[in-house]
Amino acid sequence: MRHLLRVSGVSSFIYWLQFFLADAILFLIPCTLLLILVPIFKIPSLIPDPAMGSLVLCLLLYCPSGILFSYLCSFMFSKWDTAQQVMPQLFMYVSTAECMVFPLCVCVCVCVRACVRACVHSRCLLRLRIFMCVCMCACGSTLEPIRFGC
Image (tube, rainbow, N blue to C red; front, side, top):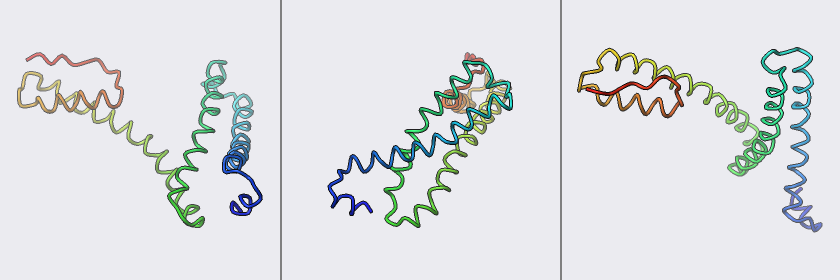
């Protein structure tokens, strides 16, 4: 199809812009349904105006980034069939990884924090304290800082 359009004189920019606009329209259909269903079902956390505005902003910003990411990932495959089999699993694992890594990181921070509190004055736990600080910075923990005085 692309070759046929290129022979007809369509530039690469117009070709990809057309696909992007078509995919954006297809993406906006479920987003619009979501924005209609949220007030209908009266979800308490999304009813206030700032929350609804944030949801709209998130959906509008996710649309181009999700489409462009899928285009970028599609270049990893030479066959359409392989891309159709691998891409859904790739997106599922990437989206699930964030939901799994953050709670695990917080759990590790809490466990290490408990160990450090039990042995605050022990010099042998210096590495454990440093590891805990790195974990807390990595997961953006809002736990109160530990005083590392010996």
